[in-house]
Length: 283
Ligand code: PAF
Image (cartoon, rainbow, N blue to C red; front, side, top):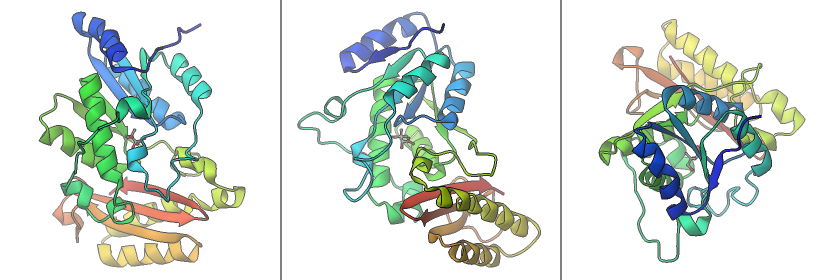
């Protein structure tokens, strides 16, 4: 039976746990998570295992990235199942600080990301989000000092934001984006899929179908703006409340009018019932 990973909850404990890895010259991979682990997270862990000597997974539901009207209180938490899965995937260390450890009394410094964090996508609908993500990821990088850190491409704007953060702060960490894992019907794996009713769950893969159809139309020569109009109508007609369906430059996230202008990423966010889903694909 695999050995349970060491669980660390304090900063001195984390330093003590990481020291022998560094003394041995081992490379360290960090997989930041908010728990409620699914196969997508475990794919990040497996890739981390292949790419580094030691794998650290952080589990911290970060209050700073939720607005007061969002689901911090009800965000799925599955500690026992998470530990079991991380034992089976042979993680070395679980970093699970409390909010008090992460944001102690008197905490007064926040990272305010710009560039991809101000692209007018998630930031338009969740203005607090990337400040919270950048602050906690900056802290996780400082605490764990990983050689590599793995993030899912499902949160594509987040991936661009943390990549930019590591570059701008001269951090010696290589940020790796890992392709989205999907259910058989195309729905991107997400901890929030647990909120879907059976009817919503049946309808949810439409977003991926629209992304693929829009990408195909653009590849076949249709103007990006026209293809997006068709896609937006399909999403509306299927009963979603659409936040955005956009085509952006895959690196800068700047608006892009033609595939001749650089690599294109299609990104979508829409609500079905009370659940907000996001997804994206490259063209
Ligand atoms: O993607 C997530 O689960 C979170 O935004 C992250 C990167 C762990 C920061 O809290």
